[in-house]
Length: 196
Image 1 (tube, rainbow, N blue to C red):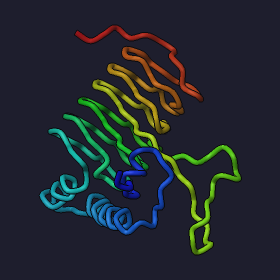
Image 2 (spheres, helix red, strand yellow):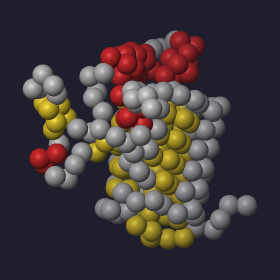
Image 3 (tube, rainbow, N blue to C red):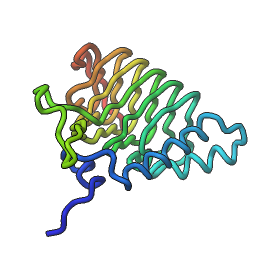
Image 4 (cartoon, rainbow, N blue to C red):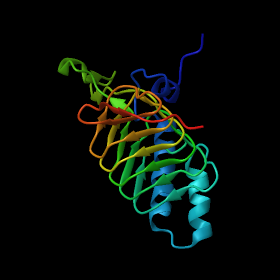
């Protein structure tokens, strides 16, 4: 049995070392491309940076305003995705957005987490130095979803199809199809008619 790479550990939700050279190369590449996405005024060059950054993009992706993400290659986006300004994707695991997903400004997706037990948040390397212990879980968003402004979505959450997440909600658990959720933590506040 071969040992997992630090990147494989990250994606498996295991303790991983973020100083790993492979992860550092991916992070450096991500920072460069996010900067290009946010600053490039040439439409073709910006489009090329977007294609290089994400793991996969569908047709007609719109990123409106400043955008932040870490790895990029962990994100898979469907058709007609609209990401508004100041959205942040802590994509230390996979983030999948379905077709026709609208994300309002100031929304945050956090795949990473740390232990509730403070004594388990830092580990020791062989050289005696400390390192932050992080665990990750993926986030998935279905089709025909509207996520309101200033929403936070936590790792491990699956948001179904035909969902509205009310502004300011904190989504900590799965969201069923055909619902409106809101609040902190988010809970179902209304059912929606299923799409035909």
